[in-house]
Length: 225
Image (cartoon, rainbow, N blue to C red; front, top):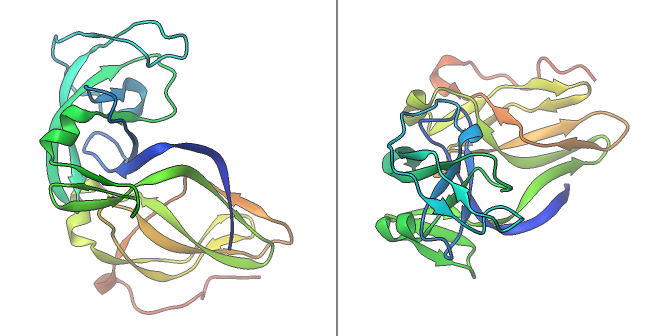
């Protein structure tokens, strides 16, 4: 597999929440005393408190940003639900969905291990990432990538091991049948097959998990090369 990284970024983690359909990307920022989330990253708009604060050093211009309010964001660690207060911001220059600051990190007894590249919160360990990947898959080859899941959040506790069934992502590019294990960050590894004659890019793909008990065994029966 060949992989191409679009840009080097600061340490971040993926978390699935009850307010989004896909995992959010959270910047781990030990220099921030408050945890933030961009309003546009929330699929389900929560009711906000009237707590408004002015923050600096979020926008590139260095100007102050006034928050819209706060809410208790509920998120999953190994399918266990946790919640913490996040400030909601709008129209900010931030490459991530959220900032997880020292307030939340301290509350969850977080330990950052840069050598092992992991973040442990309440005894749940997540991969600590420094790059946002765009996977480049060479012509007529196969690669294993990590992706999000598109299932309803309430179904995930029953999908710790599941099937991803073969299907076409776009012309000449397929997801292979595979049994997957749901990771603590609610993401899975899948196998991508590129049958085209040229290199392709896969970015921001989410797979659908099928319970193993519902599906008889089959392999690549729908593929036509």
